[in-house]
Length: 604
Image 1 (cartoon, rainbow, N blue to C red):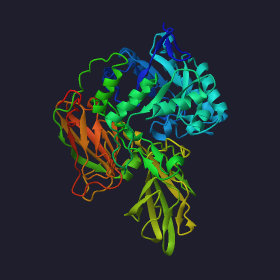
Image 2: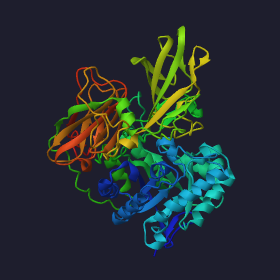
Image 3: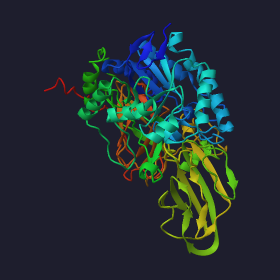
Image 4: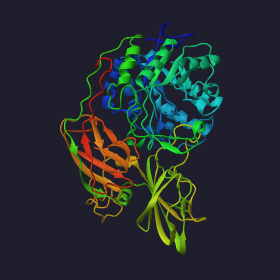
């Protein structure tokens, strides 16, 4: 068995200096059937290592409900088969532009501190997760060479006791390989996030020499490593495309390597935020306390390997740089692409109320609106119902502390859309009136001081200055639609679908919200693009696989359909539209991706 250690100036493998040329590839953002291809693409770029986060909330959606932690183990096995070392970053907080930074919505205590209630939950989680890592460490014949403690903690807190407790928990669970931290190359970040006796690394996108000089002021010894070289960036709904020039990124990578440092490309391959797991940021500059900026479904990240697994210009330029520092493998065969698709034939529809009746959680009645967290909704929506007493003259209706977006109905008629920045209904409401607010979470904040904030109507419902009490609420989790298993209707007389338990009927003619169902015929299953002309905002499932959120706000206009999700012949398609379907009739189209990127270094 081999031994990987941290030396005075280098990483050492069995005592010999090695340089880590790593790339970030998150197993949870790539269909499992495509892991092998993506890992082979890392080798072909000239990398010798892969790095992945682990999202706690994906694997434990309810307390004690542990789901498929073995996926991490299978991914690490795939990395070993691909000839790559592996770096694991188990959090418990991961940022990663992921829902709530990977922390479960149900956590108790003060997260990311030495609070004993919080740490008790972390210890139980590590006890279930870390065996997947421990048995795959390099000293056991596996690929794992390093494990991170927390993540960019210096950007958040200064609880040194918490960081020490995390290292103790990791060691107690059997982690024997070197631990490390990663932080921005700024004084307060390095002092807040570093741990005595633990390797410190830095994250940045350019100006490597300055960043490493900052690190050396705090850590004069140890190998240099950029744990996150930001070679691209992520995008927000309603924002513009984000692109980094390939030549500029390659020059920044070359500078890192010329400093004698190791590197982890963030991202080497970004993948996709399937199933509504995309996180959100807060604007407002350095304090991250401004408007909500939810992340798009694509996590392409302008990475060297694009969302579809294809090499970009950045791939070829990075490969040219990396080839001076180690071997590069041949490119694997490209993934299959769709042979022939076509229009999706949507034939049935169910109202949001019918979906909620069949798949919603328990009804909650109380004086004030409950939060998503109190209703155990991680990703999805909540219907709030309240009565405006009467008779009374029209007054403004206000949803205080709304997070994030609400479609409002008054006496069954749509009355408007509210947002966090616009919480007052445009037209005043007179009493007596029945009001429904369908509130959607656009993603919990994954970075900054407002991580973990509650979703829903968090400050009460007001009619003018008067609180409206007697609120009825019911949540709909997205994951209840991932399965086609039968669910009994609450009313045995309702005509419900025998498979899903949902009361489907014919298509509406007015662009109604709701769940649309249909089929698309496929010949030559492979990677595909789903076009959604005229749709406003919602989610799409293909054969029970949630492709993620679509939104006409852009910049993302289509959804990626992984080839392994499709099957020859007929494929089931569900569309959950939450605001407004196309007025001229629902339309979707499945097509092959655009042609692959060409290598600019060999193409005239």
